[in-house]
Image (tube, rainbow, N blue to C red):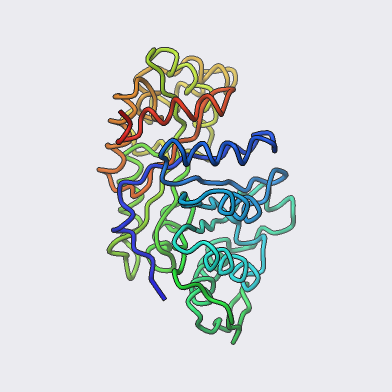
Length: 331
Protein backbone atom coordinates (compact mmCIF):
# COMPACT_ATOMS: atom_id res chain seq x y z
CA UNK A 1 0.00 0.00 0.00
CA UNK A 2 1.60 3.26 -1.19
CA UNK A 3 1.45 6.38 0.97
CA UNK A 4 0.63 9.88 -0.30
CA UNK A 5 3.79 11.66 -1.45
CA UNK A 6 3.49 15.39 -1.96
CA UNK A 7 7.14 15.75 -3.00
CA UNK A 8 6.48 13.82 -6.22
CA UNK A 9 3.45 15.99 -7.01
CA UNK A 10 5.11 19.39 -6.84
CA UNK A 11 4.76 21.80 -9.74
CA UNK A 12 1.34 20.58 -10.87
CA UNK A 13 -1.19 22.79 -12.64
CA UNK A 14 -4.87 21.94 -12.62
CA UNK A 15 -8.14 23.43 -13.78
CA UNK A 16 -11.52 23.62 -12.09
CA UNK A 17 -14.63 22.05 -13.55
CA UNK A 18 -17.17 24.91 -13.38
CA UNK A 19 -20.20 23.94 -11.31
CA UNK A 20 -22.62 25.55 -13.77
CA UNK A 21 -21.26 23.88 -16.89
CA UNK A 22 -24.19 22.31 -18.82
CA UNK A 23 -24.27 18.58 -18.20
CA UNK A 24 -23.64 17.69 -21.85
CA UNK A 25 -20.40 19.70 -21.73
CA UNK A 26 -18.92 18.16 -18.58
CA UNK A 27 -17.13 15.19 -20.14
CA UNK A 28 -15.96 17.05 -23.28
CA UNK A 29 -14.52 19.70 -20.94
CA UNK A 30 -12.67 17.08 -18.88
CA UNK A 31 -11.29 15.30 -21.94
CA UNK A 32 -10.21 18.61 -23.46
CA UNK A 33 -8.41 19.55 -20.22
CA UNK A 34 -6.45 16.32 -20.49
CA UNK A 35 -5.67 16.89 -24.17
CA UNK A 36 -4.40 20.41 -23.42
CA UNK A 37 -1.93 19.10 -20.84
CA UNK A 38 -3.45 19.99 -17.47
CA UNK A 39 -2.23 17.68 -14.70
CA UNK A 40 -5.38 17.80 -12.62
CA UNK A 41 -9.09 18.56 -12.79
CA UNK A 42 -10.92 19.63 -9.63
CA UNK A 43 -14.64 19.19 -9.01
CA UNK A 44 -16.62 21.14 -6.44
CA UNK A 45 -19.60 20.14 -4.32
CA UNK A 46 -21.79 23.16 -3.68
CA UNK A 47 -25.24 22.67 -2.18
CA UNK A 48 -27.89 22.26 -4.85
CA UNK A 49 -25.44 21.65 -7.69
CA UNK A 50 -23.71 18.35 -8.61
CA UNK A 51 -22.31 15.80 -6.18
CA UNK A 52 -18.55 15.63 -5.80
CA UNK A 53 -18.17 11.85 -5.75
CA UNK A 54 -20.40 11.31 -8.78
CA UNK A 55 -18.50 13.94 -10.77
CA UNK A 56 -15.13 12.50 -9.78
CA UNK A 57 -16.11 8.95 -10.73
CA UNK A 58 -17.45 10.03 -14.12
CA UNK A 59 -14.41 12.14 -14.99
CA UNK A 60 -11.97 9.45 -13.88
CA UNK A 61 -13.74 6.87 -16.04
CA UNK A 62 -13.75 9.21 -19.04
CA UNK A 63 -10.08 10.24 -19.00
CA UNK A 64 -6.81 8.33 -19.00
CA UNK A 65 -4.27 10.27 -16.98
CA UNK A 66 -5.85 13.25 -15.21
CA UNK A 67 -5.67 13.35 -11.45
CA UNK A 68 -9.10 14.29 -10.14
CA UNK A 69 -9.46 16.28 -6.95
CA UNK A 70 -12.65 16.69 -4.96
CA UNK A 71 -12.76 20.07 -3.30
CA UNK A 72 -14.47 19.73 -0.96
CA UNK A 73 -16.69 17.09 0.64
CA UNK A 74 -18.29 18.62 3.77
CA UNK A 75 -17.55 16.48 6.82
CA UNK A 76 -21.09 16.85 8.13
CA UNK A 77 -22.71 15.63 4.92
CA UNK A 78 -21.72 11.93 4.91
CA UNK A 79 -21.11 9.13 7.35
CA UNK A 80 -17.34 8.71 7.35
CA UNK A 81 -17.36 4.92 6.97
CA UNK A 82 -19.45 5.09 3.82
CA UNK A 83 -17.44 8.04 2.49
CA UNK A 84 -14.28 5.95 3.01
CA UNK A 85 -15.85 3.08 1.04
CA UNK A 86 -16.64 5.40 -1.88
CA UNK A 87 -13.19 6.98 -1.93
CA UNK A 88 -11.42 3.63 -1.51
CA UNK A 89 -13.37 2.22 -4.45
CA UNK A 90 -12.42 5.13 -6.69
CA UNK A 91 -8.78 4.87 -5.58
CA UNK A 92 -8.78 1.11 -6.30
CA UNK A 93 -10.20 1.57 -9.78
CA UNK A 94 -8.06 4.59 -10.69
CA UNK A 95 -4.84 4.22 -8.66
CA UNK A 96 -2.84 7.37 -8.04
CA UNK A 97 -5.42 9.62 -9.71
CA UNK A 98 -7.52 10.84 -6.76
CA UNK A 99 -7.17 13.56 -4.12
CA UNK A 100 -9.87 13.92 -1.48
CA UNK A 101 -10.59 17.35 -0.04
CA UNK A 102 -12.60 17.52 3.18
CA UNK A 103 -13.85 20.65 4.90
CA UNK A 104 -16.40 22.24 7.17
CA UNK A 105 -18.69 23.22 4.29
CA UNK A 106 -20.22 26.68 4.02
CA UNK A 107 -21.92 27.37 7.38
CA UNK A 108 -25.17 28.66 5.88
CA UNK A 109 -25.53 25.60 3.64
CA UNK A 110 -24.74 23.19 6.46
CA UNK A 111 -27.21 24.89 8.79
CA UNK A 112 -29.83 24.76 6.05
CA UNK A 113 -29.43 20.98 5.88
CA UNK A 114 -29.25 20.51 9.66
CA UNK A 115 -25.64 19.35 9.49
CA UNK A 116 -23.73 22.20 11.20
CA UNK A 117 -22.24 20.92 14.48
CA UNK A 118 -21.70 22.77 17.74
CA UNK A 119 -17.94 22.29 17.24
CA UNK A 120 -17.04 22.22 13.53
CA UNK A 121 -13.33 21.81 14.26
CA UNK A 122 -13.90 18.78 16.49
CA UNK A 123 -16.02 17.14 13.81
CA UNK A 124 -13.45 17.85 11.09
CA UNK A 125 -10.54 16.48 13.13
CA UNK A 126 -12.44 13.32 14.07
CA UNK A 127 -13.64 12.86 10.49
CA UNK A 128 -10.25 13.29 8.84
CA UNK A 129 -8.51 11.06 11.37
CA UNK A 130 -11.04 8.27 10.90
CA UNK A 131 -11.15 8.60 7.12
CA UNK A 132 -7.39 8.22 6.80
CA UNK A 133 -7.30 5.22 9.14
CA UNK A 134 -10.03 3.47 7.15
CA UNK A 135 -8.38 4.19 3.79
CA UNK A 136 -5.20 2.60 5.13
CA UNK A 137 -7.09 -0.54 6.13
CA UNK A 138 -6.92 0.17 9.84
CA UNK A 139 -9.84 -0.08 12.30
CA UNK A 140 -11.90 3.01 12.92
CA UNK A 141 -11.46 4.61 16.36
CA UNK A 142 -14.07 4.80 19.07
CA UNK A 143 -15.01 7.44 21.57
CA UNK A 144 -15.65 10.32 19.19
CA UNK A 145 -17.98 13.18 19.93
CA UNK A 146 -19.39 13.18 16.40
CA UNK A 147 -17.74 10.34 14.47
CA UNK A 148 -18.54 6.75 15.36
CA UNK A 149 -16.67 4.02 13.49
CA UNK A 150 -15.29 1.81 16.23
CA UNK A 151 -13.76 -1.38 14.78
CA UNK A 152 -15.02 -0.63 11.26
CA UNK A 153 -12.52 -2.06 8.76
CA UNK A 154 -12.64 -1.75 4.99
CA UNK A 155 -12.29 -5.09 3.24
CA UNK A 156 -11.39 -3.40 -0.04
CA UNK A 157 -8.55 -0.89 0.30
CA UNK A 158 -6.57 0.81 -2.47
CA UNK A 159 -2.96 0.03 -3.33
CA UNK A 160 -2.36 3.77 -3.65
CA UNK A 161 -4.00 5.63 -0.78
CA UNK A 162 -5.39 8.99 -1.92
CA UNK A 163 -4.22 12.08 -0.05
CA UNK A 164 -6.79 13.57 2.29
CA UNK A 165 -6.43 17.35 2.50
CA UNK A 166 -8.46 19.93 4.39
CA UNK A 167 -10.14 22.81 2.61
CA UNK A 168 -10.14 25.32 5.47
CA UNK A 169 -9.45 29.02 6.10
CA UNK A 170 -9.08 29.63 9.83
CA UNK A 171 -5.72 29.39 11.64
CA UNK A 172 -6.92 26.65 14.03
CA UNK A 173 -8.36 24.57 11.22
CA UNK A 174 -5.21 24.99 9.16
CA UNK A 175 -3.09 23.95 12.14
CA UNK A 176 -5.31 20.87 12.48
CA UNK A 177 -4.49 19.94 8.89
CA UNK A 178 -0.89 19.46 9.99
CA UNK A 179 -2.06 16.94 12.57
CA UNK A 180 -4.85 14.94 10.95
CA UNK A 181 -4.50 15.34 7.17
CA UNK A 182 -2.02 15.28 4.31
CA UNK A 183 -2.17 18.99 3.59
CA UNK A 184 -4.36 21.95 2.65
CA UNK A 185 -6.69 23.10 -0.07
CA UNK A 186 -6.79 26.90 -0.22
CA UNK A 187 -9.85 28.42 -1.86
CA UNK A 188 -9.55 31.45 -4.09
CA UNK A 189 -7.98 33.92 -3.89
CA UNK A 190 -4.74 32.20 -2.92
CA UNK A 191 -2.02 34.79 -3.47
CA UNK A 192 1.53 33.85 -2.47
CA UNK A 193 1.24 35.84 0.78
CA UNK A 194 -1.85 33.83 1.75
CA UNK A 195 -0.06 30.56 0.94
CA UNK A 196 2.83 31.60 3.18
CA UNK A 197 0.50 32.54 6.05
CA UNK A 198 -1.44 29.28 5.69
CA UNK A 199 1.73 27.20 5.74
CA UNK A 200 2.77 28.99 8.91
CA UNK A 201 -0.51 27.93 10.53
CA UNK A 202 -0.12 24.39 9.19
CA UNK A 203 3.31 24.06 10.77
CA UNK A 204 2.11 25.18 14.20
CA UNK A 205 0.43 21.80 14.71
CA UNK A 206 1.79 19.35 17.26
CA UNK A 207 3.11 17.06 14.51
CA UNK A 208 3.51 19.28 11.44
CA UNK A 209 3.84 17.66 8.02
CA UNK A 210 7.23 17.70 6.35
CA UNK A 211 5.91 17.51 2.81
CA UNK A 212 2.30 18.74 2.82
CA UNK A 213 0.07 18.86 -0.19
CA UNK A 214 -0.94 22.48 -0.77
CA UNK A 215 -3.55 22.92 -3.48
CA UNK A 216 -4.57 26.47 -4.39
CA UNK A 217 -7.55 27.79 -6.31
CA UNK A 218 -7.47 31.11 -8.16
CA UNK A 219 -9.71 32.87 -10.62
CA UNK A 220 -7.87 32.85 -13.94
CA UNK A 221 -8.10 34.62 -17.30
CA UNK A 222 -5.45 34.57 -20.02
CA UNK A 223 -5.46 36.77 -23.10
CA UNK A 224 -2.94 38.50 -25.33
CA UNK A 225 -4.82 41.65 -24.35
CA UNK A 226 -4.10 42.08 -20.64
CA UNK A 227 -7.00 44.51 -20.22
CA UNK A 228 -9.45 41.90 -21.49
CA UNK A 229 -8.08 39.30 -19.09
CA UNK A 230 -8.28 41.70 -16.16
CA UNK A 231 -11.89 42.52 -17.01
CA UNK A 232 -12.87 38.82 -16.93
CA UNK A 233 -10.98 38.18 -13.70
CA UNK A 234 -12.78 41.04 -11.95
CA UNK A 235 -16.11 39.27 -12.29
CA UNK A 236 -14.76 36.39 -10.20
CA UNK A 237 -13.49 38.67 -7.42
CA UNK A 238 -16.74 40.38 -6.44
CA UNK A 239 -17.11 38.46 -3.15
CA UNK A 240 -13.58 38.84 -1.78
CA UNK A 241 -14.49 41.96 0.21
CA UNK A 242 -17.03 40.00 2.27
CA UNK A 243 -16.20 38.78 5.81
CA UNK A 244 -15.86 35.10 4.80
CA UNK A 245 -12.81 36.01 2.71
CA UNK A 246 -11.02 38.06 5.37
CA UNK A 247 -8.35 35.42 5.98
CA UNK A 248 -7.38 35.47 2.30
CA UNK A 249 -6.97 39.24 2.27
CA UNK A 250 -5.34 39.82 5.68
CA UNK A 251 -1.77 38.92 4.56
CA UNK A 252 -1.89 41.29 1.58
CA UNK A 253 -0.13 44.67 1.88
CA UNK A 254 -3.30 46.44 0.70
CA UNK A 255 -5.69 44.61 3.07
CA UNK A 256 -6.78 47.77 4.91
CA UNK A 257 -7.34 49.69 1.70
CA UNK A 258 -9.36 46.82 0.23
CA UNK A 259 -11.66 46.73 3.28
CA UNK A 260 -12.13 50.48 3.03
CA UNK A 261 -12.83 50.21 -0.68
CA UNK A 262 -15.51 47.56 -0.08
CA UNK A 263 -17.15 49.70 2.62
CA UNK A 264 -17.34 52.60 0.20
CA UNK A 265 -18.98 50.57 -2.59
CA UNK A 266 -22.74 50.21 -2.92
CA UNK A 267 -22.56 46.50 -3.76
CA UNK A 268 -20.19 43.65 -4.65
CA UNK A 269 -20.45 44.30 -8.38
CA UNK A 270 -19.40 47.94 -7.99
CA UNK A 271 -16.57 46.79 -5.71
CA UNK A 272 -15.23 44.39 -8.35
CA UNK A 273 -15.56 46.88 -11.23
CA UNK A 274 -13.50 49.46 -9.36
CA UNK A 275 -10.73 47.27 -7.95
CA UNK A 276 -7.32 48.65 -8.93
CA UNK A 277 -5.61 46.63 -11.66
CA UNK A 278 -2.65 45.96 -9.37
CA UNK A 279 -4.91 44.25 -6.81
CA UNK A 280 -6.57 42.13 -9.49
CA UNK A 281 -3.14 40.97 -10.68
CA UNK A 282 -2.20 39.95 -7.13
CA UNK A 283 -5.49 38.19 -6.35
CA UNK A 284 -5.90 36.17 -9.54
CA UNK A 285 -3.90 34.48 -12.26
CA UNK A 286 -4.49 36.84 -15.11
CA UNK A 287 -2.95 38.67 -18.02
CA UNK A 288 -0.91 37.51 -20.98
CA UNK A 289 0.38 33.91 -21.06
CA UNK A 290 3.76 35.05 -19.73
CA UNK A 291 2.15 37.02 -16.90
CA UNK A 292 -0.06 34.07 -15.96
CA UNK A 293 2.89 31.67 -16.02
CA UNK A 294 4.77 34.02 -13.68
CA UNK A 295 1.80 34.07 -11.29
CA UNK A 296 1.69 30.26 -11.29
CA UNK A 297 5.43 30.07 -10.62
CA UNK A 298 5.06 32.52 -7.72
CA UNK A 299 2.45 30.28 -6.08
CA UNK A 300 4.60 27.20 -6.53
CA UNK A 301 7.56 29.08 -5.07
CA UNK A 302 5.44 30.05 -2.04
CA UNK A 303 4.74 26.37 -1.32
CA UNK A 304 1.81 25.29 -3.50
CA UNK A 305 2.17 21.78 -4.86
CA UNK A 306 -0.77 22.24 -7.24
CA UNK A 307 -2.09 25.50 -8.67
CA UNK A 308 -5.68 25.17 -9.90
CA UNK A 309 -7.10 27.69 -12.37
CA UNK A 310 -10.78 28.58 -12.05
CA UNK A 311 -11.91 29.89 -15.46
CA UNK A 312 -13.27 33.43 -15.29
CA UNK A 313 -15.75 34.65 -17.86
CA UNK A 314 -18.92 33.41 -19.53
CA UNK A 315 -17.50 30.76 -21.89
CA UNK A 316 -15.76 28.00 -19.91
CA UNK A 317 -14.77 25.87 -22.93
CA UNK A 318 -13.15 28.84 -24.66
CA UNK A 319 -11.49 29.90 -21.40
CA UNK A 320 -10.04 26.40 -20.97
CA UNK A 321 -8.12 26.66 -24.22
CA UNK A 322 -6.79 30.12 -23.38
CA UNK A 323 -5.76 29.04 -19.86
CA UNK A 324 -3.70 26.20 -21.33
CA UNK A 325 -1.44 28.83 -22.88
CA UNK A 326 -0.16 29.53 -19.35
CA UNK A 327 0.97 25.95 -18.77
CA UNK A 328 4.74 25.68 -18.26
CA UNK A 329 5.20 23.33 -21.22
CA UNK A 330 2.97 25.26 -23.63
CA UNK A 331 4.88 26.34 -26.76
